[in-house]
Length: 318
Ligand SMILES: NC(=O)c1ccc[n+]([C@@H]2O[C@H](COP(=O)([O-])OP(=O)(O)OC[C@H]3O[C@@H](n4cnc5c(N)ncnc54)[C@H](OP(=O)(O)O)[C@@H]3O)[C@@H](O)[C@H]2O)c1
Image 1 (cartoon, rainbow, N blue to C red):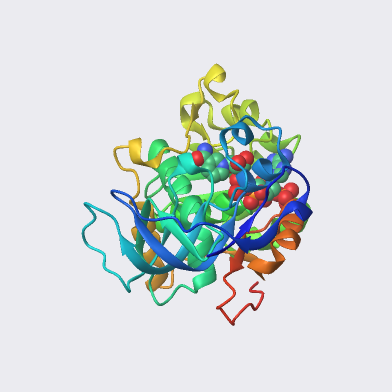
Image 2: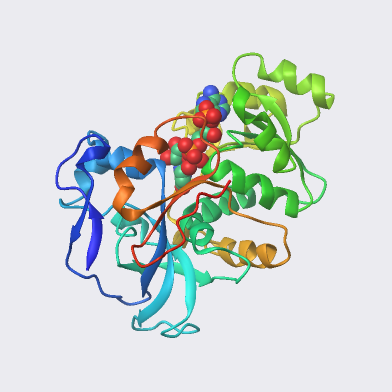
């Protein structure tokens, strides 16, 4: 099969598209013929090398944890899905990649609704599950006022919409260029950075029940001050959290009691016109190096998707 891959760590230019041995669906997995895959911060860190996770992968490595496609192999023990079904989801988190290729093996998935483009579906899996689990941990529900720090990014843009769908009122932080983007997601925008508690108090009487840090930018003390309690804050990206009493929500979705229900919820909301995966740009897989270079630059608004060579629609979607 063809695959985006790198055989040494380095800048985006180490990425190429070439032949790679085909993977097969193991127990509890499906294999899809990929239509589109996503790019995530972890892909950039792995490719650059030097992160603890870089030591866990064998080279050459196929980047990408999210993919959508048509099922062509169903692993042992899998029910409720058949060859030919259109699905979206993500690889086993322990594999740290494998999605941006002709075939990818998914560890969790749901049916792709016709309301979702392949590009949206292919880039959404991990962001949707990550956002869902963090909102569950916080207990976000009807009437909650939730502050999301990093609301324009891949996880943030999803978390805003899923929280609003639960009936929450959402305040979202972003850089100066992301304020309109956050408004379009139906959150109340506020600039991130020093002085956040004062800015939030000014726009919302100081009453914020819960806060979600999806940026990992060092704002946990401010988020605790804004909500009044470390127990009211969850982070997905700041490892100092537990030392401050803040829960850190990490990526083993299967281990969570309610793990992996987020995709189905997002698919249903998409069909109702209440959810869309914000796409920053779409590239063909052959231009993965350009896509990785863009992903490293801000402002980061939504996800970047890669389309498989047989997909003819490579239109950039705002
Ligand atoms: N725990 C998990 O299971 C899990 C899963 C997925 C991702 N993650 C981690 O979560 C983080 C976010 O992922 P992502 O995919 O959403 O990344 P992303 O798409 O790169 O978005 C990050 C967002 O943070 C914003 N930001 C930058 N500086 C900030 C600051 N000082 N304060 C507040 N926001 C700031 C960025 O805005 P600008 O670019 O406009 O400045 C951007 O919109 C990454 O560290 C990722 O590795 C964790």
